[in-house]
Image (tube, rainbow, N blue to C red; front, side):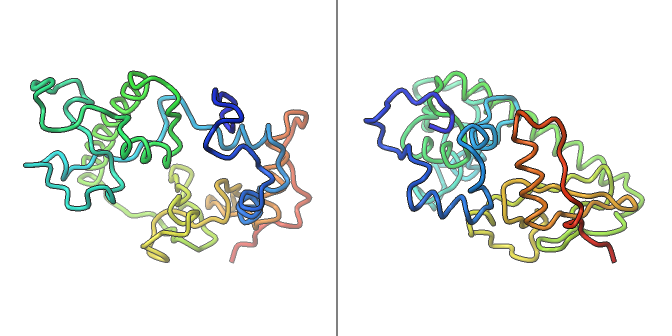
Length: 241
């Protein structure tokens, strides 16, 4: 329904009513209740580009005799990593799953917002690109850490106003916190925001978060296709100490 491409219509087993009691409460808790259906589609539609977020491939499942002890409770994909990378030499004799759309894997993909109405081939292509990008980024970060000569002037935390230490520092919104399940609490290195979006204000090279009211106002302006500029009345600008 959000992706505007559900082919099941009234027979779909998933809810299609945004104004149901559950959805109304969920939208209100995230300051999204004022958005139209079209605006919500822009914000929530599963991304189908190369930056789509995927659940990780379970490294324990890919070791030894499918050694993952969590089984169906594992939050990672139980699929052959080498198959994803088109490097599996065992074919149909492989002891690990080559089905990215089995029941468990499909649930994990849906939870991460991946559009599973597409063909497995399309999802596998993006998943492969995500794995390759992650490998490259990890390698780059290791190289940078070896040559680093200084640390950022400030360190962001889960609940603080500061969102990043510099123009180059990107801080992600913690999705686990939005679901109410972040185990790191104040130690989380991602931002614990009240919404899946967070507008910021720069002062002296440091980015500060808008309070909920200003954050919501800016998002409403940004999502309105008729509005040519994002704005707020300025009363909700965060103060820097």
